[in-house]
Amino acid sequence: MPDNRYVVVEGVIGVGKTSLAKLLSERLQARLVLEEVEENPFLKDFYRDRARFAFQTQMHFLFSRYQQQRSLRQLELFSERMVSDYLFSKDRIFASLNLTDRELALYEKLVGWLELEVMKPDVVVYLQASPDMLMERIAKRGRPFERDMERDYIRQLNEAYNHFFFHYVEAPLLVVNERDRLREPPRGLRGPDETDPVPPPGHRVLRSDRERAHAMKGESAVGAARGPRAKITAPGIVEMKRRGELITCVTAYDFPTARIADQAGIEILLVGDSVGPVVLGYESTLPVTVEDMCHHTRAVARAKSGALVVADMPFMSYQASVEDAIRNAGRLVQEGGADAVKLEGGERVIDSVRRLVESGIPVMGHLGLTPQSVLAFGGYKVQARGEADQERLMREARSLEVAGCFALVLEGIPAKLGADVSRALTIPTIGIGAGVGCDGQVLVSHDLLGLFFGHTPKFVRRYAELGDAMRAAYERFAADVKARRFPDEQESY
Ligand code: KIV
Image (spheres, rainbow, N blue to C red):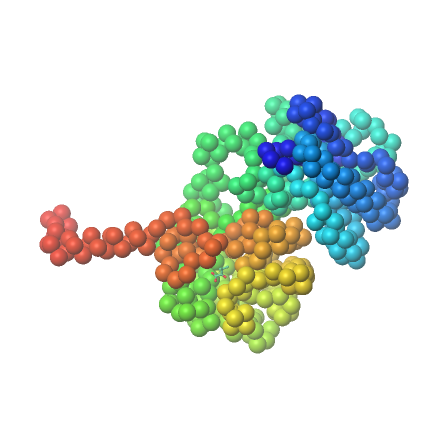
């Protein structure tokens, strides 16, 4: 359906999505599609006893939404314009909030199939309001089946909606906060975190006017971080996800790069074992040693950055035993000055992750295309394309979170899987070739600066051509020396 023919309005119960959908459908002369909430015979019981009636309520909603969505396909054939007050995939928000793990596993299997047949909207308008405002409106409309709804449930729902839409990448998203609409100071709100608009998950997001005005004034989060800033910690990185802030990470292997990236406001400096191919001229990361990593981590740590410094554990420094992992991670922290370590793999590193975290060392996980397994993979190939591999990756991501990782790098996997994992975890995912739905992005500095000579993967965006700039500078220097133009009088004693 071309040019925004299918518009969806979403938001937590009580936010006013049905009213806005009605208004829009009149303005756009579009068919109005409303959710049939009151038809659910379990809903009243659910608000009284959530644990007991969650599954029945969820299943009823899932099937009635699915039936309704299937009938919309007919309208699409006639290319009729539509405005709806719900998004089919929001069903997942309620499922993750209310179902037990076993129920959720069953639900996930089912919903995955159903979603394949459901139309995707052309644009989604996400309305936000504070829990207090929502409670006020729910009380005002006085629906009998909503009478037992608790404020805490609304607060949880609010957070779950923000989390969901923060990772929503299937259609352009317009986020409208109650404060944008009222144009007056918020009344009786509890705190800024309860009403903060969800920041855009990527360039496909349409922003509210207020956010756009900020962007035009050049007040980007990165630019704002030029001055000295408080040290970012591992829990601070987790907190960023909770607040809905996207996380930036670049690799750094030396003092000047660390300083400059820190001044630019980057939140995580990763002393990657990519130092091997990028700086030391190796063909892969495999020859990199703990000594190499300590040496480069020390150089980065000397920059005393506000950014969190994460050091990669190199190949064979943790694979053989938990004891190796503890000893070598300890060296990276004690001798190198790292704030955290990163290691690659899922189930096979879980014990090491748990022990490291217990020892007080924050750990970042790494799944997908893990370069230390290049020999086993048979090359640098996109991972987890098949269903079984995707399920395994999701399982391993959850295990790493439970074991205590504060963040997880996802490398070289399909974008949809990157978004799904990010939605499923409360710790942030940092993507590299894992799509825009991750909670943050990492690039190898030399790739983004145009300083690398090898193959450049598709996911790299070059923000500068420093290689060309350096070559030109060296050529000018050489020409000046050969022509005795350098040094001149000013440059001599
Ligand atoms: O070593 C490295 O640079 C990395 C990033 C690519 C995530 O692990």
